[in-house]
Image (cartoon, rainbow, N blue to C red; front, top):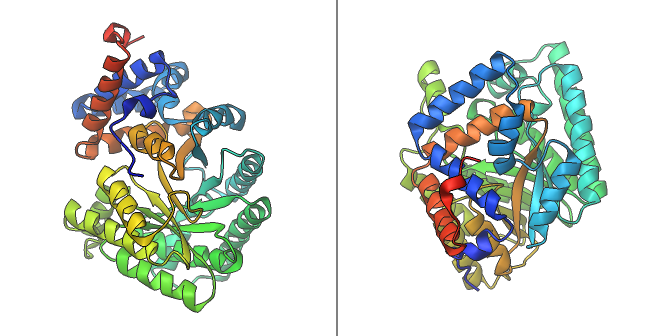
Length: 395
């Protein structure tokens, strides 16, 4: 069955009228790069001055893009999506904590999330980033192949122990772990530790997923090698395919350090590699599980076309589509309604600590050509279908 992604009644049926009005207001604001830039600077200034803006943020952008401040609040959001067969991915949205005690606390939080997910049928995944458990500078040194001193070797061993503890808990709880991608100049050691976890835990079913950023021109080759490595070493590959999230930072870093730009020359090349990666994975589904993480409508529909050609059932448990919470509901909920497996990335955490994540979401929305206007047009279509007045958008 081909999902009807233009069906706004299905896409937004989990949203109340007031929530739809709020979404209309937010995406109207985000559609203006100038207004978004001003808003980001205003929020950053207010946070620096310790102004009491948590309440305003929670009622607006936080509620749109996050599940809640606590796991208990987030579970309610997940249950609402689950009512329409859309699962959730717990993503602790707090960023930037550094230091060994903070890394150990992050492990505790991730394990708590895994155990919470295990008790909740609507939450099959937990997401994590290696940089949440490891010093950035250590990853840079390892990526560059610089020999480590004894204390750094011990430090890296502790990182391995942290990631292993998380994955061991996930395996015992029957919860899947998505290990997110990082900047290319620290990605090699992150890949290394993720492959170690897949070798250990991905037998019979996939517990651990690695993330492949297709906006890098070398990723398709690496994915091909990863599938071969999994086959040769008798484990299942967890392949999470995304386009990528660090383009401007990557290009600036390449210019600063005078090495070849790792990013694709244009969007068309990224799209081509993304769709080719989906094709490659679908044809290798006996050796992997595939996580299609994208807001690109055409990539999702092409994947459905390929599934039909390959005779892959819409509810095959080795395949799932995913989008961010608060975005692309026309894909998520219409795909779920048509029988496909879908899960939303659901960030959570205290409002003030999740602000960096929220500001990045706002920035990314303005930088993706057509994304915000498409969201806004669908929201307007649904408000018209419901005969809602937009005069109260700002309430």
